[in-house]
Length: 301
Image 1 (cartoon, rainbow, N blue to C red):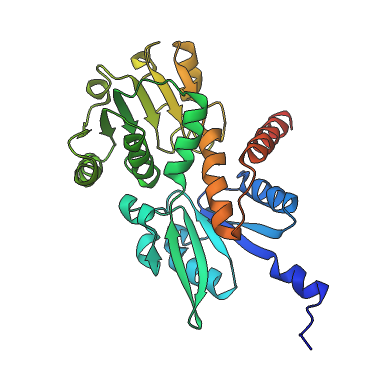
Image 2 (image 1 turned 90 degrees about the vertical axis):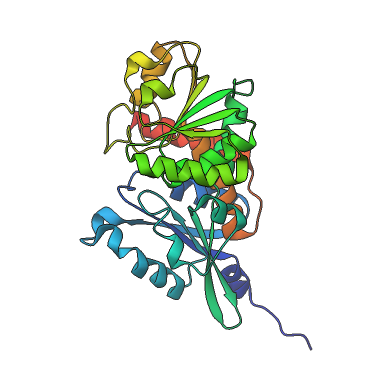
């Protein structure tokens, strides 16, 4: 007689414990976004915020947190600022996408041969491209300036080049980081990539700007470039989504630029991460609508 499986056991089989590691993440919409989509698909999922700002160790706590999540049976973790590159040496394997970018925003824990392996993925690049194509489908990609050569910037750089960017100009406060990323990108994408230390020089002749630094977040307010450099011939793509209307987007709209807000990437990367965590394809449009309703509710709170 075949073994029977109790309803309780079947329910537990569909349960997932996931989380987000990063600094200053208490206002993240990821828990609500993932948990609601799981409910819509008949799954049980709990999404835990693991805020480095609440630890005296800060980012130094990362190795212990990865091991704790592995031990506690997490299905996976999202990784955000400032850990997307620091997490790489702590993992057992990387997807091709994460290896190419040298950055990870999603870790999946997988039982193999009696052990649990931590495998790094990156859904930032595909997530940015998903939102960008829907928001600015006819954007001129002849010369694109990317501000920020960190983990998010690296992922977006690959995605922008895959979309057909003619020339990609990297600008970072750490000039060496921009040079290193440019050299790595040229190995895969040819001589379409430049590094430039001065943002004004970088923007000469540019058709668009992608902002991939934390500047503009609630905890790091401000502009990543002088507002006077913006003009109507530029489009501007933002990755910060707290607040959704950043100082950069306000300045860009005032200058007549077409814009793509950071919410589109937030949803796009979450769609990819959700499928990695659960093995189930989410409804991207439903997640997008839910995200916008969460932002609206928070703005009126």
